[in-house]
Image 1 (cartoon, rainbow, N blue to C red):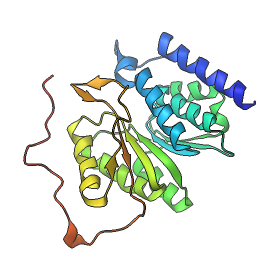
Image 2: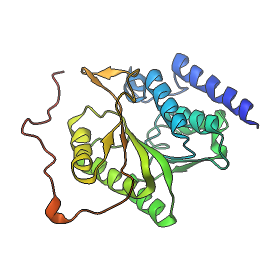
Image 3: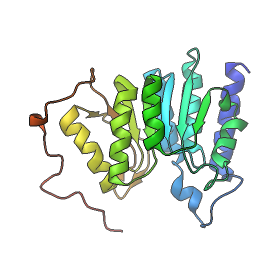
Length: 238
């Protein structure tokens, strides 16, 4: 399959998923709409990764596959030799009936995508040991603080210096608090306007992109900077 053929298949799969939904959903009337990254956020993610010239991306959380298709479109558009898309989702078969992986296969993206069906806390250390170097990562797995924190801990060893980490649901207190540690103590920097055209949850942009510093360094423990604020990061009124 050449590049143009793959791009056509990816775009057709993305349109079909956005308009018709997946072939199967979990119980719950609006599960697909609630869980999946909205189409305009997928477009922002695709454009961000393409502008970055990404050729290797790690994704945590596959679910229905909307973000994975957007990442695959970006990797195809960049067109570098031997693209890699490593996806981590321990629940893809048990909870999602492989519907997300089937979306990627229908678009021909399984030629360079790899699914690791295990918790990110186990998969990410293995990728570090394998010496994987990624240009970017998309994080949409567990939203528990300690698990997001661990994901980011390992991703800083995988994503190259000056690379990107993108997070979904960054407005939630557990995710936002975990990110603040890396901003305050390790020099991670939000990318302004990266998702300016994306959706908004509770008056806050749903996704955020963070740029890693130019070198992987370990600060002295005496340089620790508190990452909580005097005004508690709280859940917005529902």
